[in-house]
Length: 348
Image (cartoon, rainbow, N blue to C red; front, side):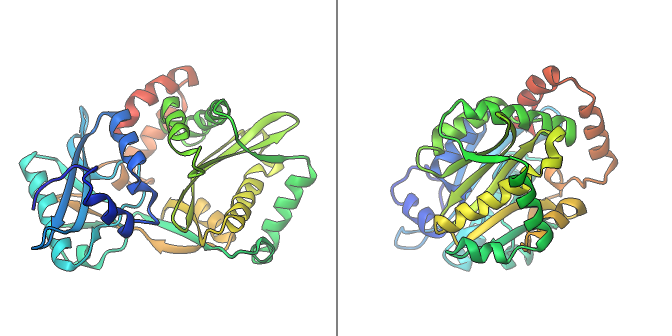
């Protein structure tokens, strides 16, 4: 089987059929991450004897001065299912990916496919189980969704509303800058991690806001933006992608109000699932937060060849992770912002 261009007319319909609920196979998303971060693009495909496309696996080649060369499907994408019409096509794609990793002398190959019985049986691959995802089934009636919430969650939402927090859906590009100010603060000072460059969020807006595929929700208090949340939609799924808040206002519960507004929006717009995103299994605090919303936990395994490596495979309790986060929290934002924007392409 041969590598083909992503824009190949035979390939695009197959992707649309197989990955209708996966935002990360959106053509605009693939273009955004490859062009913004300068990754080499390696689209693998499988075909049958009639020449029809029966499988697709996109890889990005990433070169880091610290970790060397690696192949990832896909950077900054939590879940990229293996797209295959049958087992033969799936095996063909995996074989191609392993050969490509060998030919390019990649330190490792990382497939972020989630649950996949076929991959779990491949002896060459190493299964990593550091993450889970949390899903909330949605119904058409927001009142029903409200009644399904636990009482403590309802109280927090009512408290936020009573104290005067208001949520609005961003309509202008300038609102991205308001969100980014909070995002930079949250990533660097709270989590101790480099933040995406501001340009990334503006390009996300430019690519997806007009169609409604991206929604930016902002929580305001007395005229100031105190929290924000970015949602990404695909097929029947609405996904929580990014969130940030000003810690000085957490007592007003803006994040609870934002989350409820997102769920309510999902019901109103007819989505069937609200995806609360990837969570490290060792982050019990965040796990419990999502559990309280009635979300259902689902395994999110990643698969590696020939070794399990990279940031996505690093335990949050490891000394390497703790050292990184501790050091990053100490950096002034005027340093952490530009430096993180430069380094971020190596972290995907």
